[in-house]
Image (cartoon, rainbow, N blue to C red; front, side, top):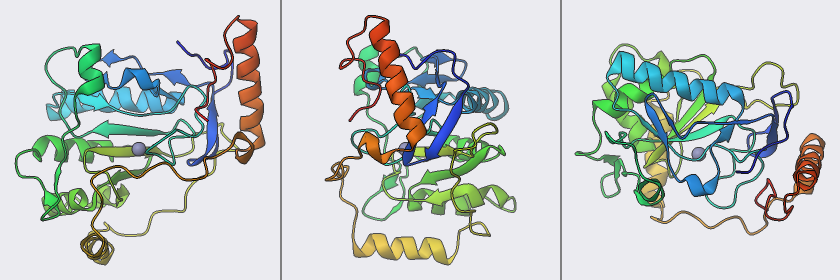
Length: 276
Ligand SMILES: [Zn+2]
């Protein structure tokens, strides 16, 4: 198992899409109310605040909302940094993808975790939440997920945001953190605020006021109807991010981690903590 540098004070460093995390921990692959998917990717690492958040969400969702449990997708690599394919962010140990698909009632095998497909919640023809898949389970989970102060934003597909706007009723404050974005039709993306003790962590701009159910959402649908999303994930950017593009603290962390790996007799190329 790849491991981050030991004895490090946890710190999220840099921007969500240009940074790293020191002192990350790994989420247990099974816990009360969650299971981790795609173990071969080794992306179940995060700042301790992210691990605590997922544990708390899974437990509260089961206890308070009758949740069947949560399937956890990509978090971060052992020291964060850029991921190959699919994501620009997930670099500082504060981002996690959770599936809309409810957790099955058995412990998943390694093969199931690799190959089970996440259920798409959006009907691409109508750009509405899909009839069969979209239920109270997802609505309650998203409301619960947005309810904690450490959450900065939750990214969902615009059709999911619209379904939440329609389901919310009078209690709408939580909708402010639910942000429409491309491609979040089979998972939603939790982003936590910079935690205390991370002076080099760069926060995003504050959220716009309001529940985001009006003009902003209408504009998303106009955009999606004008240029429909392709069903496949876009390729990785032509110019991959280099280690030298990252904050200095991350470059130092990378060197220290590689040296620790070599001192422990590891093969440094096999143990490279960044995909690059
Ligand atoms: Zn994500």
